Length: 407
Image (cartoon, rainbow, N blue to C red):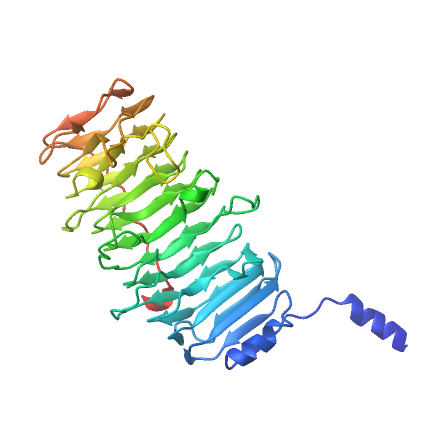
């Protein structure tokens, strides 16, 4: 009888548990024995200088979940940090306020234990202080493969370092393919130097790696850290149906090739230096976007195609090849499409095998095209240009973004 009961017990799947967590020490203890399907429920209140680390193995059907007892009521302060490694771990409803550490949320436990198929959702990282630190830091660092950051509110970074970074490696084959969606990226004040991007996918050293990330349905509002609101530094990424509202910067395809920028909305909203998309590299497609009331010039024009450097080093300017700028709408912009801007004195290579077609360009404030280089390699056809545009359908602003508890 006892052997029969023991056999039955072993055959039954382990029941998922809700484990109440009172502090960082309790979290560390629970993290050692957490199983697929378990939920670590963090108590409401302020968690000061708490470093939570976990490397857990959930499944798609039974993820390991770390969540606030009440979304938005579990508040991390000071040098608090969350490091998540493993697979199928979900983090839900946490709020990091005025962080002071080098990292806030990172999708790895450490350099040897990265995250895959994990999710950060319904969370917030915010700052409303002017920190004096000169060290570079990130609010969210994404490692590993197939992770998702969604429905979060991220705002107020004042120190050097990109707000959110996707990190790649030249050695790893299973990486990238992350999804960043339905987030609200709130105001980031001007940094005054390089290193103030809101999102960066990759870096110059890994820029020829295919990241294949999807950045969609996000709202970027007054993200003014530097000229590059988004800095693309990898290949094969998709930027779709995002809204940029009052952003003094651009979505810059800085390094890497074969990215798609489609159906985004760029609204100047009275911001000085508000721009659109800047193109560098090969095989990029910019299609179906709306550029409206943008005030930026040169690299912050509504659409800027840069000159390339012969035999460019990885962090230089690669020649624009086989770009397609098609079916976009430009309304009331001071500088619409600029071709051949030199970002470096060595940059002399004009775009080649490039198509600019089917665009609707209002010329009430600025000329349709500003030509600063040879255009023999550019095909321009079927573009509508007029002082006033009529019967142009405008896409709607991205649907509501950010955590539900912060509405």
